Length: 309
Image (cartoon, rainbow, N blue to C red; front, side, top):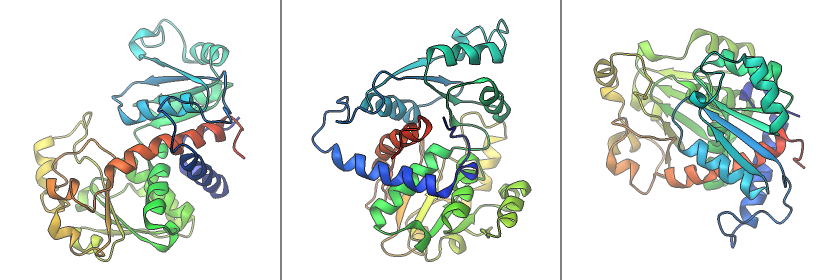
């Protein structure tokens, strides 16, 4: 049994095995219907329980399809349906019940501490479906997409992030250390990554490049990543934040300083941080990126269930 909470805590050899397995499984599904199980049916009879404390579209759908294609089933619980949310049952008791009925647990949460608490009491694997500090399943899938399109290891590419320093960027920074790729970050001064993140990078004898100028960050990039600048649960002055990022929109002018064959990726949903002509243009690979969540998350499940070969 293995958990999947933060990329920094997982061996790079295991992360590579997940990507390789996902590549193989994607090739084998060319003529399959959406809900047809894979021929080897590796998780037949297994139940994946999902709980989402925050809104979810891609993570919810992709994990549902992932477990179904591996031969298992999924059940999604709403926090307000549980005794836990109403204070009637302890987290430890809830975890024991989840472990009794299910074989794996996905939690999308507004608390990293809650993830660690569940991990303590669960006797089944826990997967981080997004937390305030991390979105590991998204970023590992993004690495798969980059290498699929560019047909070379990400370690040989220049990766650029334009946008807020959020949970997705934190996981991308962790990935840059694990996979040894060059990462340029473009954001306003007051939105730079937290000190403990930068300290962790230095502790691992790596480096990330931070620019307060979008063009400098995007110069010579092979891939430009972004995310919604103002997320649904952002407890900030949203008007001010949008104004602060006014000069950080990903548009044709900004893409022109990247390499000619650069691609644009966005984990969605989108906002004014990207122009329509870039998001819907030829360099945008956002739909391929979204679909690949299914394949990578299948292999993450196999890793957690001890079935990854």
